[in-house]
Length: 103
Image (cartoon, rainbow, N blue to C red; front, side):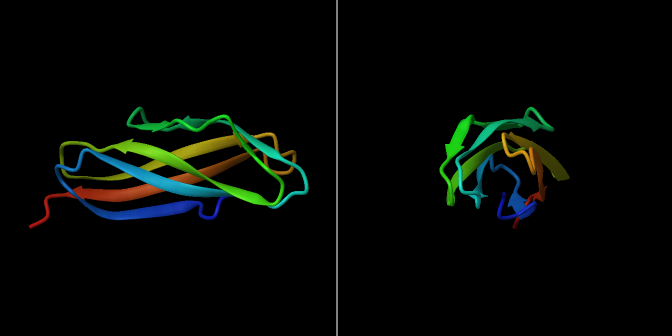
């Protein structure tokens, strides 16, 4: 369903306030699929596109809006997406990275 299940954002400069992280959802079935919603592991993330209908044999981009902390830290966050796909009704996407003062 998703093109990746783990996204490494690498090192992000301290002071960066927000990131938009795109993920691509592929529907390989012969009928449309609906992304119904998602569970976000942190209040620092949001999604605006859900629910979303993906036509048969098509793909769509979903953006995860991420607000970054004001301190140096390593992070790992998860998004659990829910769909009406009877074979795979939920999928996790993990986001990881490091906020660090860059010279």
